[in-house]
Image (cartoon, rainbow, N blue to C red; front, side, top):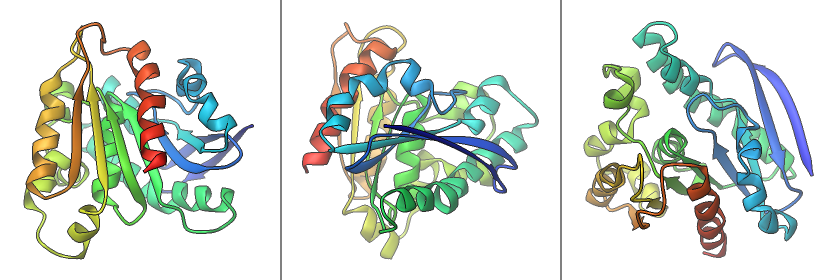
Length: 244
């Protein structure tokens, strides 16, 4: 069961497409890669890879257009504008996407699992770390967590507030960190072409320093930074997270 909707987001200042696959189960927010639209995950067969979980009523999958990712990848506008979009994506998720997911699940509050690959992994982990009250776990596949190096952007306040590698080291003891310590992050990564396992270890170290449960799984050099790898990873780790 697939459902597509679209609305104007005042936080991102444009129309955004929002898609759901499934009829019942644990909500999973699946982020596209950089510049991907809401249906990229279906075109690249990630939805097909988790179809047994969807058909069994174990998960419902949601995705939306990667506006900030597109702007970052294509260097749209100023650096400040791109960092603003990155921050505003979190505001959009919490104030628009989460209410839409809750309404779709019968109106009850939901603790959502986030997932994504490459820059989608950055978003998945960032959402959990920024807003742990709304999310129960994150799955970051072949993650790219240092966007300053990759996309040639210079950190400002918006970037700092959006980026776990920047804000995690400075998180102080308190209720937010207490909640984060009840969450978990899975960080599988391949060792093949275009992969950088060091990025996963870097974010894992920052999570670990704050007492946040995480695990890095390094796959062999047969697994490249590419869709076939993520089609194998996604069902394996979602099944693990849903069963927890």
